[in-house]
Length: 406
Image 1 (tube, rainbow, N blue to C red):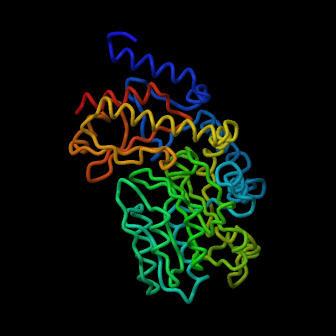
Image 2: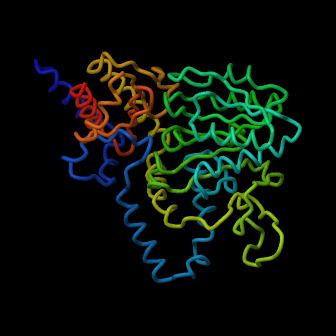
Image 3: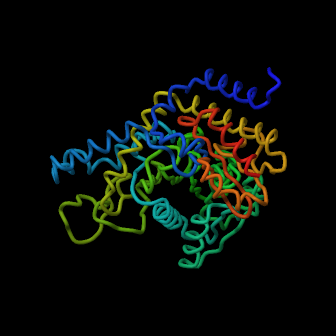
């Protein structure tokens, strides 16, 4: 230790980076001039691109140029399923044949929820929570209005999330579907997905999990949980790029009886026969509606390679250590900010929210200084270090600039 606290903090961050089992991984991601971005703390919104993704996209464009329409027969037509299976194995805990890549999260959420509700036609309720991501709430509000169903709201503290006991108390014999986020978008609260799924099944209801803020940073075991349905995006910890297509999971036991509401030609049995009448394809392909975004699916494969190589348990350990470090530094350097996330890493996903009344006005100045978190109203600054691409030194730099701007 020295008499210079800043130097001691910097030395400690360097020591943490040197001991990090994933210390070589940040170099595998693109980084701009350090004078422009000195601390990227928004991996929970949009992940950095991998260097390998650039090469893969260039190769895909070359394939497009050289093979033209022949690419559909050679690879592209099956990509939503082959990449879906890889997602299932590497980050979802799902056996093959249950996951497909396709539309936006919003569209897949609608398709999965409508299909699930059709499997419980005699029930009249959808259970959700008051602080779920806005899209989830809006989609379900629209479906409830469309079908004449009731919404049963679980009221939660925005700094926490849905506890298993509260979920069990809210699910009734009238509940058709429970829709919750595995990791809360605001607080980072990590729900007990296995216990909540069990509670829903005990009441005869189905469960749809939103995995947007957990996939790629938190171990997920959809098959072991006996989850019914799941949806998630691929541009956060999976680094698929802006607008990369989402994934949908349907438990194998439900596939034969599952019909999603947006009938498109690529989800029909024998689509190239162009026959009259819609007959859903066998298996998970029935989740697909229209032509998938081939280029949009390419980038995430390189991130899956990295997670597969490192192991999701190691990724999770790094994520927990990084967010613990955020909290440690916030207590030291931002004492006036309130920690609006669970303190126990076992109850927390991959990001931390800090509340302060001046964070809204501070955010543009942080971005100008090359420190990039995001803001969630009314006064929350979300810090989402991505375990594969973020260093401890980068986190320290970010917190020090935030303290300076306050």
